[in-house]
Image (cartoon, rainbow, N blue to C red):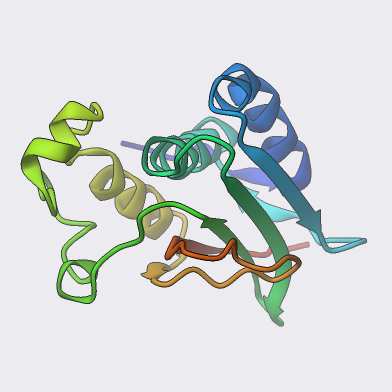
Length: 169
């Protein structure tokens, strides 16, 4: 896969993906909180692939979050040369022994549950490759870390994060 990167406003890409997925959020009554740092610099992004990264992570967040759950998207300048996107959910979380493998092809922490929910074990592996092709990093922490709201009591959740380099002027 070749990337066609250009300086892009990540906030525009995020907004378009949220709009695209709105029916899925509404179907499960999931509240989506988005915070994008003001005056966020542009990133070097293949916009089509950037949408795929966000779609894959948000699709998993929806899949593993129960009705009336919460998803938070938190976007900040991470350091001098990249933007960090944290996507936290109030879902079932990722057990510590599975966290290292969630980006492996065809890996499923609980095959029966994941297949029932429509998982194949491909999405996060593809997402990792796309992030790395952009010279970014990706990871997961569980329990989730919410930046702007409290985690609902009795939930574990997960935060999937990734970085993208700033556009070179």
